[in-house]
Image 1 (cartoon, rainbow, N blue to C red):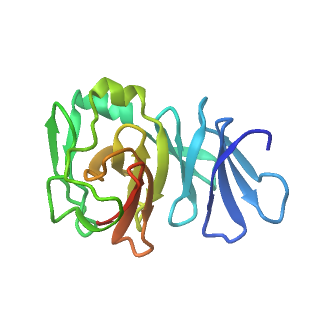
Image 2 (spheres, one colour):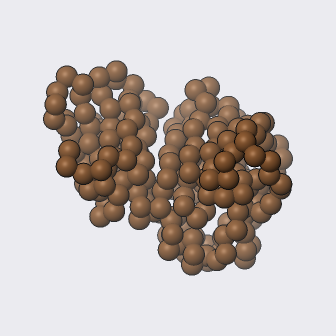
Image 3 (cartoon, rainbow, N blue to C red):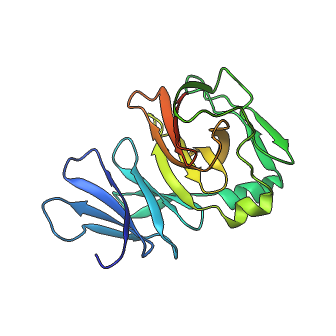
Amino acid sequence: MTCALWDLTKGTNANLFVSGSSDGSAKIWDLRSPTPTQSFGISNSDVNSVKVFPDGNAFATGSDDGSIRLFDLRCDCELGHYSLSSELRNKQNLLHLTIPSPADERYMKRFGNTTAQTYDEQSTSLLHSNGSSSGNIDQYSVNSLQSVIENQGVFSLDFGKSGRFLYSCYSEYGCVVWDTLKSEIVGIIGSEHLNKINQVSVSPDGVALATGSWDATIKVWSV
């Protein structure tokens, strides 16, 4: 490759992995070959994060332009497109949301004019925090809707166990939960972080996830 490589992720097939790079592409690689087996033109901006769907038949990409795309590996086609700016413009407000329960996939929405908060203690609870101490605050200092829309690069992605929910970290909006079937935001995680959330990872059993932040803390959440 002749460009910067930003992310790698392996699939369910032990021989295959996916790369995301600064040329706006994602490539599928086979360990037995020195050249990619498939290539996808994703964006005019950097592809910062890639993640394979739990069944191994699709993968998601997150790029600097704030777009998340879901691709089918079997037919080289796009299955879904998730845009934070489009979702926020449709609402005309920042969202006040809770993370959906994996048991019944119910969710609640509340809309406001300022910052986002997690307000349902049962549906999203902090299990453990590792790092410097922090207090309870609103979703870290998002000053305006326009600020979020203009600075919406995707830092990190991960799927829930079933693949229905996709967790994504944005540069100015924290960790967002997408419903991949409805193509809409159904939750926000990480209101206790004091700075940008740049990494998310779901546990293998799907019952918890960890978020890493520029505030030098790692927090584990029950989902």
